[in-house]
Length: 92
Image 1 (tube, helix red, strand yellow):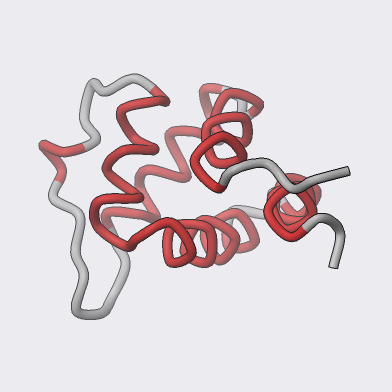
Image 2 (cartoon, rainbow, N blue to C red):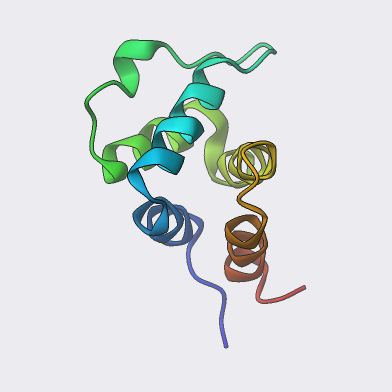
C-alpha cells in the first residue's frame, strides 16, 4: 500500500484524537523549545485541518510529522504516534 501524503496522515491523526488529547497536543505544540515557535493565535479556536496547515507551514511536511510524533509520545498517545509513522512511511 502506498503511503498517504503527509498532510493527509496528519489530518487523520488529529481527527482521531479525543478533544482532551487534541487540547494536550496543542498545549505541547505551543510549549515547544527551539527556533520554530507556534504562537497561540495560530491554533487557538482553529479546526483540526487548520492546525495541520499551521504544522506544515511552520515545520514543512516531514518536520510536521516528526514534531507531531514527538508530541504524541509526550502526551502518551503512542499508538497514534506509531500509526502516523506507518502512514507516512508505508510501514518502514
